[in-house]
Length: 191
Image (cartoon, rainbow, N blue to C red):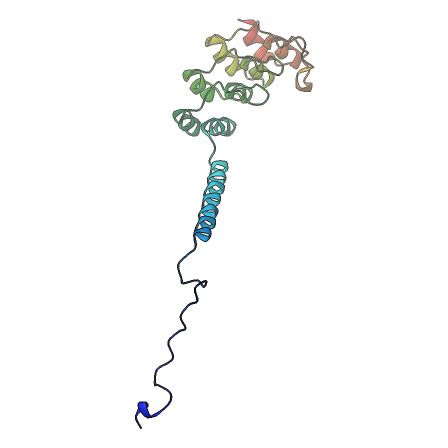
């Protein structure tokens, strides 16, 4: 039997032709714009997430000082970290290194311009005061050799300093004496 004799051809019917208002497979401009806007929002969100995960050089320096990681501190400084940038309390990375007695970190910071007599904004504590609070005679000796002023006092109008023994208006020597740090007291008295 020949297919011409039947009513049905051996192949399927072609798809119907689209009507004038139907979609023809091409994207409409509105859909493209919506998709583009979603891509932009996703890119901005990803940039924000990456920024939060990758600390700025200043934050990296703070973390390095806290971790006593000299190499990370060098890298942060090389990336532009400000060695004199103060945190929310006005303390600098040198204050942190001094309080921890990390002379190697202090040396790195001072070599890159850290100010040895910069007072914090809260109570006027200098890195030498921080070294005294932490009972670090070696740090005090280093800071004094770099020009720290042993006569500098904390702010007289500040509250008692962090709840420690020493009152407002104290020098590093006052802190050492009042805290009973004998080696530090001797080192500071020799200045």
